[in-house]
Length: 390
Image (cartoon, rainbow, N blue to C red):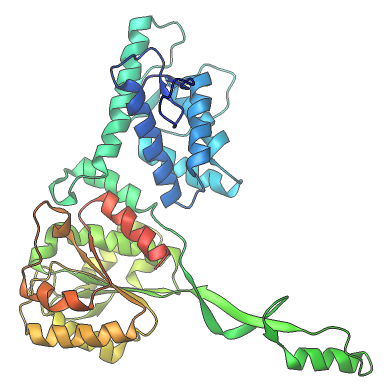
């Protein structure tokens, strides 16, 4: 990774950063792209790493350089974290994004820091050629993490899939708030007659102040229906891990079900803190792994037994309906009337040239509010953002 420098007033890019000594070889652009991707990851984890803070990071790196991972860590922590509550999230994101360990203050020379599968020795006496080589290695590894965000999870190797799983565990976002039926005292809102009268009685009948109230807010419910049929096997594990992240972040406002040949509620299994234990519990709870798909029947069963009114319902499926497509259309119409929004996640939508030609997709499309991809980490980041503002 090359050092970052600020552009002058010569009309260069407004992001305020370029590679020091990199010339026209594009290394500066790699640094900017890498750190922008890191800031995007922090925002997905709930850290307010906005555009201004990202620019401050690039200016800081122009001073301290980017050859020392410890320097990059402290520069990012000083500029991207808005409160002490952000530090733990920042540490997790830094370790996951760069694959290294958190830097610590020490009087002794900084130890070797592992970046993914490469070890960069922090030797202050290295030659200029060695320094440039380490810069290029660090930039290549971080850029590789950015590329990994857009790769199809169905073709990832074990190590890459493990990295994606770690990143998905960081995707918890806030949830849109909705008004509940309960009230809470407020400085503004409708008049609270009872509190006003009670206070007046305590003061001898004199009304000195009008008390007001407003509706309390609570997170909007999200319901996930995840297809675990044979055609969804390459994506089912990643979708279930995403569901685990949502359930863990909002346990009282998230429900998860698997659909295939039968409907199975998975919310309790996904409440395990450890993702590995949660996935093991889910695998034992689902009786119809890699079977057929009867979405119409399962959606009818869901609407008969569970509440969808006012919720954001996410259906993750490729639309290969083995049952009656007309039944699916009827149930989707009913669901669209009850739910706040209906989001359909199809892993194949992220592939170039995809057309929703299956019977299930044709039946469901008229009743879908958002039709999104679900094949990569970037797609899941987009989905988490949609659910946070649905």
